[in-house]
Image (cartoon, rainbow, N blue to C red):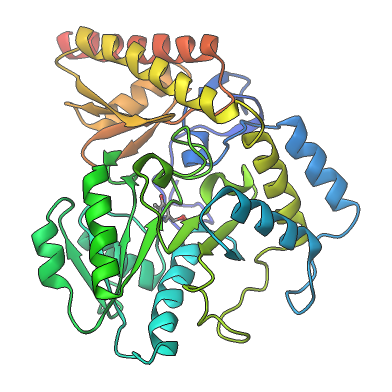
Length: 395
Ligand SMILES: *Cc1c(COP(=O)(O)O)cnc(C)c1O
């Protein structure tokens, strides 16, 4: 293993895949595995969805990449679709979640700069957050484990506890630019942020002239049964990030904003070589066309309720191993009382994939196209994994 030519930054499970179809992956040694990880909330339409394969192939035969020095019709069209379906009026395209958050942070600082307040650079973030692995998004994340060894964290982040409105108010100062929050913390363990807290943050931002940024890299693109999770709360941000599911597996990130919030991002102030290239845009457009079709998102919400109901029964029958089901739509977590890595390994033994998260939570994130029968199969395998763990512990 230590002869791998790769950086050792991932502790990889000993399993590899050759192809996929829908919610199923086939390993290099021919086993069929039920994918309730979706590449960490990425493959919203599962593997090899015909609409995405078709869009990719069709665009591949036309043009893959042109620079943002020129107009890109596919990009303008995709941005218009995103704006039509959200609060946003402007979009910047990039290639990953961290880049989308970087753009959101820069947008907030520039907004204050062009408003005559260059001193307003600080961003309030929340304990348990995850915003990415670049130096700035790491500082926003604030997790000491990820920051260790990388020198002084990037300037300008103040972290408080979710729900502690008083701490947020006390932290706001003359240098504060924005508040950055995930409507549901994904990596942090599917921690739901109460709607009243989001509403209170909105009021604070309005009162103090701050921008409200929602990081929807994990919660967006239909995962919770709405296109974006902020729709559940009725609270509208000024700036929002998306990535993970946005390209259905093709690397696409986006920073969305109101026209006012984006007004400082003028020609030459930000850029990306690859961001928004025709290939990425064609696939992203195909993802949204499926998600925005009549009834699709309502069905995701329904399937999410069904999955949580079925999981609640599983949790009841394994009280020594698991104790809580949480989440919204198909962004579901089960809190474990044994190390989540053990549960994940036991699931792999049942030919099923999940993803670990903070607070010892196992995430179950099936592709949004999962059928009821496949949800049943997932619940059956999850139950079998827990039963096997119980037997191993008893024996
Ligand atoms: C995954 C994630 C990111 C980082 O995305 P990358 O594509 O890995 O850079 C940022 N924010 C949230 C909420 C995420 O879940």
